[in-house]
Image 1: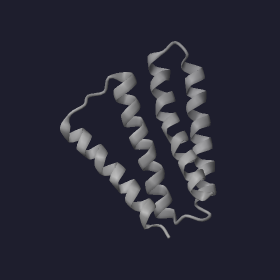
Image 2: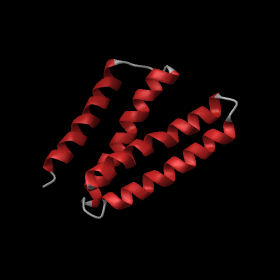
Image 3: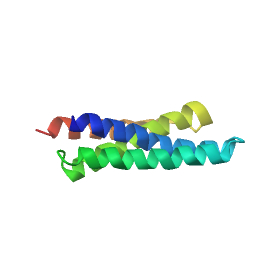
Image 4: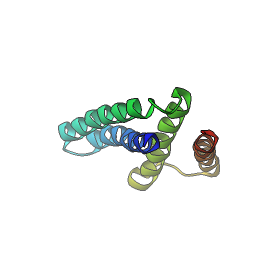
Length: 106
């Protein structure tokens, strides 16, 4: 169950930078700021639940990795962030690191 909590925490971790960006690019500034704050809160709660069973270093690295991968992907898809070989390779290393941490956990 802890890994499910951690994945949910990571998904909420994507929500807050997304909310902050939408608050800058749409007319619904307050709604998106509220979305960002709620995402931060939910992300922290689920990380806290996950850390009851998953070592802190592993949980934190996976949590931030999921957030980074999600923000990177949404940035490209929704906001036309730049894509080049070096950025894609760096993104790939983050994904490999997340997978490696999951596989190394007993």
